[in-house]
Length: 155
Image (cartoon, rainbow, N blue to C red):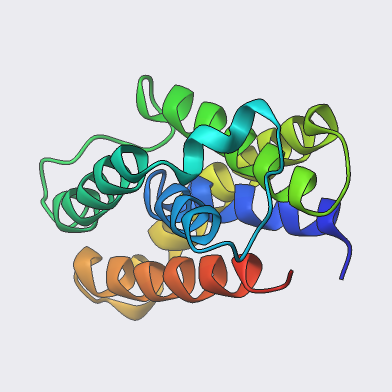
């Protein structure tokens, strides 16, 4: 599978959960599953980066289930998603021997798709299934975790 497609895909998952895919990318870099070489992105493999992103991802997975959580399509959530989607996309592209810039664009586009598409899917599923929001949110978590793990293990 092409690394630019994977960069779009990781962006989609960032659109669903901004920090979980970033945590997976960071862990993958630290474990040498993806090679960031001598790029400026090598900071993603640093232990402090891994620790911070992991802690923030766990908190995000919890906070997303709270009824007081902000809308993902509103600022600052949208901004965080496109920035992290671009960062993760760049890492995946570099690991696949493409330019970081191509990965930034791919991750950016993917994060917009995931953010707005995920919002629509979640809203419509809750209404159609007549279930609590957190039930669909848990399914979204599973998709994000599984999908992110899939992307970072393709190298």
